[in-house]
Length: 347
Image (cartoon, rainbow, N blue to C red; front, side, top):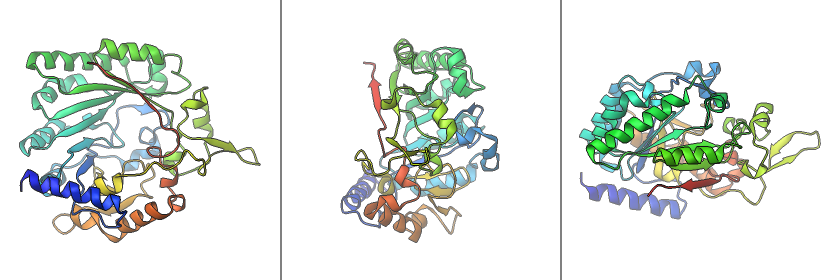
């Protein structure tokens, strides 16, 4: 298969999204892979960091990973994202998987990580030359603020890992992987945002500021839970959703607010594969119930069999006709409300 196959699959995906077909292209043009659902931190507002998530933990096997790569390689136009509900660097075979992607000429667009384990993998990551961006979540300019959200983490480990990446890039005379620091605004850190931005500049990193999400929303609920209310910043402009108060005093997401649906290309362009081979439309479903489209079971059931199965086609029809009827996507943290990004880039 040639680059022409990838390009044709991409063009077909764009066309089918434009006409709002319930049937997508032959394959997704990009993938998000969950190497590991295990996390070394216990972040607040993160279901993966709670004890309740213990039943959903594991690492993607090399056998499953190799089957996925073998099937999708000819059609990948936009590469892969490494993300999910855990920390990918907890996968003991992380570098082996990266090397397999390199051997198959597959690019990693973004590796999402908390950065605490970055130093031990820095040299091999830079050496691979296939990871374009490393996105690191940092919610504090001081250890005191940082650990309020990222429980169990040390800010100094993250900074050391970034510096080590930068050193290896200079040694190899390469500009990749680029470092991007992502910061979600909470009440705990809203007074330190400019300090975090300055820290990013000193680390030669891009900086991205994101409005505060609601834990209840990523669980498919419109009522804002009490824990989220404790974490939301004082500046309501930095809340990810418009809200309203009900007659009984509950704070709920205003799903009929005019700042609503901005479109979803994921249902036509990408899919999310969990560590155990479950396929979801995206990684937003923290309940493991709303967006599950099928289960990989090679050699009988691959990505192609699931990508346009009855569940996926019904999902596309519902999204395209009446998004408010979807029990989860109506409060999608990625495509609804006032999700704001303020970016600063290094030259």
